[in-house]
Amino acid sequence: MKKLFLTLILVATVIFGCNTSSNNEENILKIEQLVIASETIIKGQRLSLTTDQPIKNVIFMIGDGIGIAQLHSGQLQEVGPSGYLHAQRLPITGIVKTHAKGDLITDSASGATAYSCGIKTKNGVIAQDSNGNECVTLLELAQNAGMKTGLVATSGVTHATPASFATHIDSRNKYSEIAEQLVESEVDVILGGGLEYFIPLDSAGSNRVDQLNLLSIFEKKGYSIVLNRQAMIEEDSDKIVGLFSLGGMPSKNRIPSLSEMTSIALKNLSSSENGFFLMVEGSQIDWGGHANDTPYVLREVKDFDDAIGLVLSFAEQNPGTLVIITSDHETGGMTINGVNRENTVVDIAWTTTGHTGTPIPLMAFGPHAVKFSGWWDNTDIGKKVANLLGFENFPLILSEVD
Ligand SMILES: [Zn+2]
Figure 1 (tube, protein in one colour):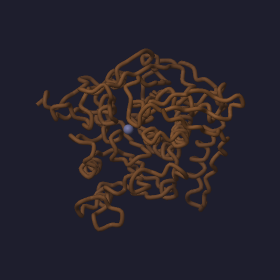
Figure 2 (spheres, protein in one colour):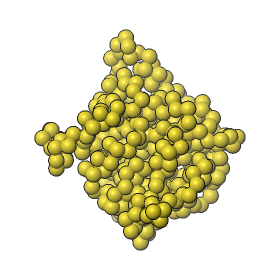
Figure 3 (cartoon, rainbow, N blue to C red):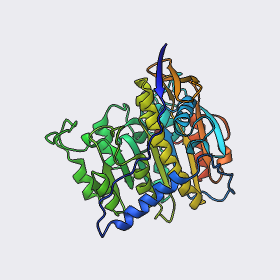
């Protein structure tokens, strides 16, 4: 069994430099106010149960690969043994079982499809059942109901988790086709990495096999394209695609951070009179787990938790907002063996470089959050969200309708 020893260092708050200019100062202020608001909340300030008013907005946050140990070690790093992360401030906690169709251990495609469609499918499959029939996703039903929609991730946006909410394909590895489907998805805000599948073969860094320029197709459809943080902040369009790296976003010195992308998504989507459905993924906790790289995992838990703090601030100020925070599976079989007397070294052990079948945590806040308390199958979570939003006939497999 491999043991990694981690020196706990108080991480200085990242201060983002801004080159202000006259016409974007207002946007920058708003974003920084949101970020600061989430960071200045006293860690440990618990949120209370809210009244069960109708749900207007749903923010579904997935920490890919997060189990209890990932969250708790992130807490030890950030606020010590007695403190609480933002993720630990929510009033409702549940536990989620994660098996895939035909496999006790799920991958992110099957895991996200359980949430997005409320069905079990085989590993590797994106929003289809195991017979290749498309299932209708929560995001698509939200669009049908007139809600705005958004996808935010720190992986490529063509990766399994975001893809499972807005595309349908038999293999998560068909990234080029997933990118083509995202262009047609009508999702209002798409932010993350993955530029490599949206630019033509002859462009530097392209991973496509053809000359399709999906960015220009996005533009023809009325989207604004932003390729760096500053452009993202200045952009005020109704539909935005932001792609900030060729593949997954860098883990160190990530610009923009997940919370900055999330704040832009919330600013855009909250203009919707009919509410919105936003999926936010902290994608790379899983990647750190596969590498059994404890500092990587803790850095990613912090990035995810900062975004959670931002989302909770938004949800407190917008009472019709239901926040669900969960994972798709645990990665690495991470466990905490101990902390030294000075609380300066955490002894982390890993049991695998793959995923595990250990059930995962779920936290909820906002109207009807109490319905998520308990021990559930992952498909139950998608079904509950659908039910709360009044989406009938869910799960819905398209061939059964035809
Ligand atoms: Zn994984």
